[in-house]
Length: 399
Length: 150
Image (tube, rainbow over all chains, first blue to last red; front, side):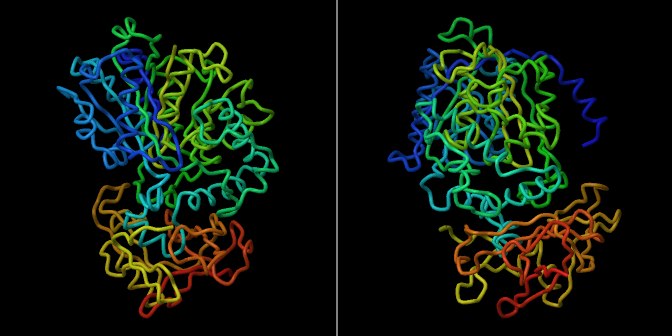
């Protein structure tokens, strides 16, 4: 990406008519389990109903639905969700890129629909049954013929295997110790220990990390996200209307999406910029749209599919120089009580692997206040980072 | 790990190699045909010379659809690597631990070949190590490009 194009787009993305135009007014989640006894469609439907109730709205008022473009629509198409919920007149339906970048970037679409008057109440939903389904998240990639033909014959299949050489290259280029990588897992688990809904709540030690099995050197099981059956949802409406609803509105102050010029077929192996993510574009743009700088951000919710991917995005968003992301997790800096809390619900590593939507839900809860032991003091600005390999969304939420 | 064979690939549990490419899948068929002849080829733009891997229709640099398969020197180097301890591909278990290398080529910038590094003990590969690509026949009529340390 050239500096000049970034500059010109930044100037068009500074505070604009969509800054603070909509708010997130309701959140809902299923129970998260490795294997749920309920079908995933039921988990999603229940989460949406809970989110609408949390907002103090009626399901009859929901007139728009948005999810990601690749996973949500396969697991539960929007029309199936609308039929279950009995939505009487769904006037808006959109899909926003893949997985984590989709569910974090979704407010970009909802804001346009709501600000234009097209829709009034838009729900973002997502869910997976990748804890229990055959092949889980790997099988999703195995359906790609490029992957099946050019990578699987060599055993290069399954997300942990793609990220192991990323760690190797990063360590070669910038230096990275086992302890620095472990700090990400340990810090994230410390947050999960404070969250009653997190799947893994037992605090971790460096010894626990070192005894965790290696899947692909140097990546250990504890570097990897969980596998989860679960669903979540959040409800958006205009900030004007939000003022009269149940909770303090959490404003969508900035949102940005960017895709590099590689397609999903590459699965990281062909990325020219192997150690960077599109967060280097979306982070600055979303913060500029919100009129904030990294110094204003009180906490980060980062798509931590692996410990290393969390470090890469933290750097790319602008919170540490490239190669120095581990410093954010040193000395408990990102842990409860730390200077810059990261993944305050326990993230994909320890809370649940629902690809970023729980990161949005958690940011909303922190900005409302009342998170008990895990509440970030005086939380006013939160940044959510949604990743899907070649695509990325950043979302700035404010109290 | 379970999972049905996706399009573009076939499983040959009877062969020594557990997961083989579909040699006839059009977008990369010339790659496998060349490997059968012990040659390494990648798509190169006929207009600007950019190498494009994996194949696509249009060159993202000059926006012309004129890719040709060009033979390149099999000399490369390790860009990164890992040792596979647990496979998510079915039937790989008796190949473990397996060295996987991401191989780059000085004369084909932009290309990364995902492959295995042959005849090396676990942990014997390092970044920047020079390799040459060889083409072992892993099943009757199927030659896979693999890396051997120089």
